[in-house]
Image 1 (tube, one colour):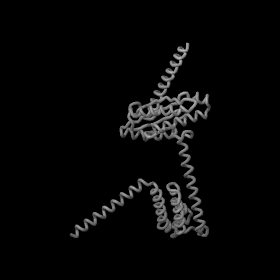
Image 2: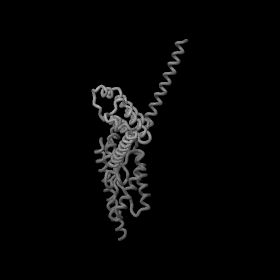
Image 3: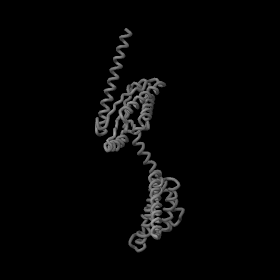
Image 4: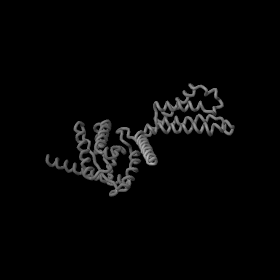
Length: 312
């Protein structure tokens, strides 16, 4: 009877621990702010333990110099907080780091300089703000380096990096991937006749239409000039043709309010069939795109000749 009761208690404890573990895992995976809060605290605890029980004892015993590098150790959690979780929590981490540094048993040799809490906190807050500013500048620089300034789409560098992981995963899953290459027809004529501002407007509209039609199934980018590249995943030929038709209709609708027509030539290449890497797929799509462009140009010439004959 007692053994049975203990087994029930053990089962309840195990069930409770499993529930706590699943809750922690769920919170950790779905809430990135938790990671941003825990890692600085873990690092701060590790620095404090190292300072008090290892390095500090060596300083007291005369085995290590009294050096300001201890202050640098307490700046490590401040730096990590600036990268992961800026804001109120960052200021709390700054206060905790400066307090633990002042409370350390192995104080600095020039204690008279850092004995004031206000001075120490002021220094830590200033360094924390510097870390935050530096991280924001670096993040913005990375984003700008991978983004087309005019359209806001990823640029050639960004799409090349994304394509590697997309193609690698598609090979593993044997899933369809289509590379879509789009070129704006008569773009030079738009610039020459209506000005570069009109040309920029045409590119922005083209980017917007591509993103609305293909953005949900892939990545869209401007790779230079009037050329756009899309990498679409998990879509069959029929659904892709429907999206392509929708894309052309959207351009036609957008052109209705403009003094010029936004016309495009499109080339499509399929992974596994037309190439095995991004370079091969782009070359195949480029060949098909220019074949379509030449076909349309030939058709327009024939229409022009027929119209002249009809006039005569």
